Image (cartoon, rainbow, N blue to C red; front, side):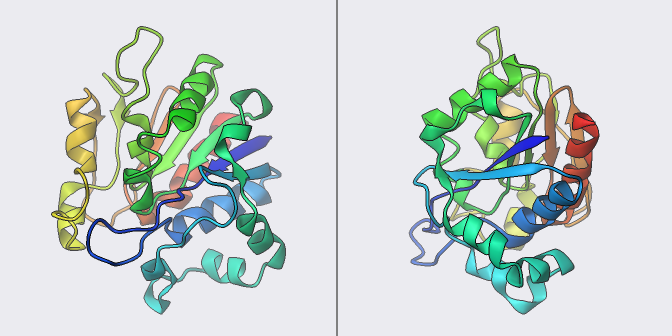
Length: 225
């Protein structure tokens, strides 16, 4: 079971002067869920090297057992510091791809040509594509075999408009993910803010928010078994 994780390389939160990146829990929880299930994991990012960590996801109230495990796991920390360049990977070498969220993907992975092609190739090969929280933004520009938006007619989820409002970033993000998924023809599903939701439709596995990261990983493991 070979799984590719693709992380953001974007570290600026719009014009606020604040930093963003990937959300630690959304990386750590699926990483260990899959690793403990026997997966061989490769980490990639558009620029390669150390992807930026959203500093808010490193604050005490955002920590979980998995993030604490990561902090004490030098091997995993070294692996994260040395992600391969996204342009150097292809779908052939992996059984699935997983995208952790954080606000970063809204800016870079959403329009990254290598990422879009990678997703389309995973779908063509009948392999699962999983993304959580803001990371379903990576699906927005991908197309299906008919040349239509990949999410058209598909049940999907992702960070909701009300959750974006709750964190005070509705006017900072370049677009609202819920709105964009609907605009592309996705059948958007959600639960109450901060509740766990993982949605599976064919090869697409999406999660609503950080609390959904473990559920997405479990659905991915099920799809691979």
